[in-house]
Amino acid sequence: MNYSTLKSVLEGLLFVSGDEGISAKTAAEVVETDVEVVKDVLKDLQKELAKKNRGIRIAEVAGGYRLTTVIEHAPYFEKLAYSPSRSALSQAALETLAIIAYRQPITRVEIEEIRGVKAERPLHHLVNKDLIEEKGRAEALGRPILYGTTKSFLDYFGLANIAGLPEPSLTDGDDELEERTKMLFDRIEGRQLSLEDLDRELETD
Image 1 (tube, rainbow, N blue to C red):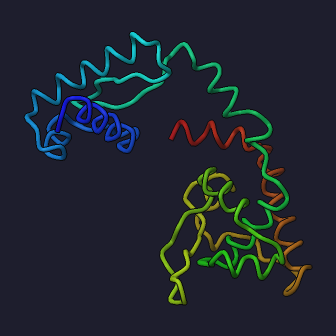
Image 2 (cartoon, rainbow, N blue to C red):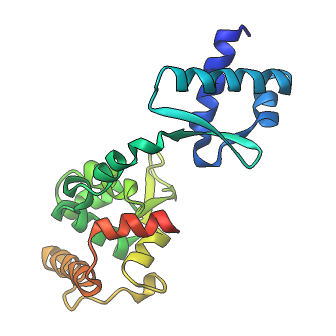
């Protein structure tokens, strides 16, 4: 592997390693190269990113390396994270969340059958908010993904477990969905929290 390719691969490894980062030893094992060579390349990449004033940097943390952002750019990241367009849960997302909460584990197709509309975008939004997650695969054609709520969902709605969800007074059809959606709205209002507060809570966990 030539130098340019090695540097590119290491940058990719840093990216996929996320917040946990990666040690020089692990990186060396992956690229099948000497540890000292990996360290030298990472240091070169570190200097290159700083010299070119790139928006990302390489930090050495607890014996490993990880990608970070430029600290001076923090106000812009906060503005993005707490912007109303990113923070608000739409009616579609809340309805989808209510269905998942009460019917989990459940597939996208089953959600769409209940709502009568596509659920791909609400599901993507809820996954990004860490309110739902994949719970495995259904034993059906194509092995569709099963969705369920997360610990963050329980924390946000103040529930000890999923059994703590309030029972709707209605039992079927659109009325039931409306009732369950309303109860989730009531949970939000009861705690006087917005999705901005949820973002902040998750960051401090």
